[in-house]
Image (cartoon, rainbow, N blue to C red; front, top):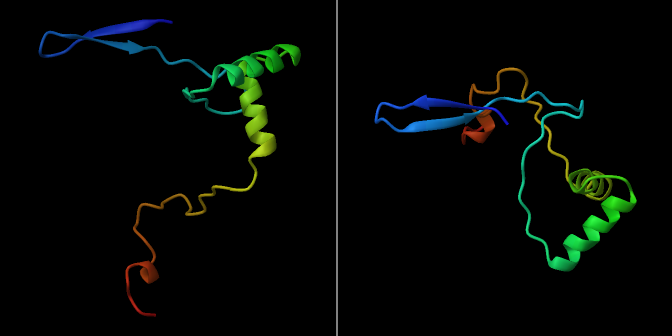
Length: 93
């Protein structure tokens, strides 16, 4: 990973990671940390290996196939920073 070092006014240096472009067309990825029991981690390793996937891909596949109850949707349009609708401000009407 490439790093860029910059000097701050206090004389300390700050290390910044270079931006990477996404290699997959599935959208932006985020790094997440999960804590698993030893057995669950081993089972994840074995399943991922047997399916020819890495752990992250298998977890994403499991999430996409099994966690479908809740859907998050933003339908506020291009400019949703204008504030809440009037009925949410407590106005009668």
